[in-house]
Amino acid sequence: MRVGRRVAGMGSSATATVLFRGYARSRVASTVTYIEEGAFRAIVDPGMVPAPRSILEPLARLRVRPDQVTDVILSHHHPDHTLNVALFPRAQVHDFWATYRADHWEAVPAEGRSLSPSVMLLETPGHTPQDITTLAGTSEGVVALTHLWWNARGPTPDPLAVDERQLVRQRKRVLEVAQRVIPGHGAPFRVPRRSLTG
Ligand SMILES: [Zn+2]
Ligand SMILES: [Zn+2]
Image (cartoon, rainbow, N blue to C red; front, side, top):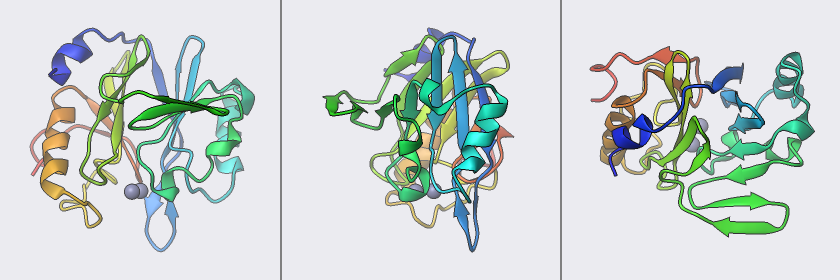
């Protein structure tokens, strides 16, 4: 199904707050984001950061304890985006083909997986074959949390992409529905439609 029709059915009452702004230079850190909608409290990409407190302190400022986090979403299986997944002991974890909680492994494809009324996953391969994008409907439009971009400049081409053509196709698919992007290793940016897809 086209993304647009799925997104049309999504709510707009989630909030997405960047807890840590990532980078990829001589040191590497993931952009880590908190999404909330009612009782749904999710962390996206609890990966490499200078220390666990880089994630937990901004979360505490939002008055959220680690054991209150209900869900963790992994954009893909590179350690820079997964290293701190165990900080959230009660969360169920989502990736491209399953959800995991304690010793339960439930196989379920990510494409179209609804996690709350305003939060949905898409399969967006390219950087790796197992990449997913989280779409969050907010009062300011749809936010895409994704490693299709490292930061606002792309890069294009992605030097680590296993399939650049697929990546470009998936960027276009996401840009059809998202007004803002929270990328894998940078600050959020608004979508300038032309420059980022080529
Ligand atoms: Zn990666
Ligand atoms: Zn990365």
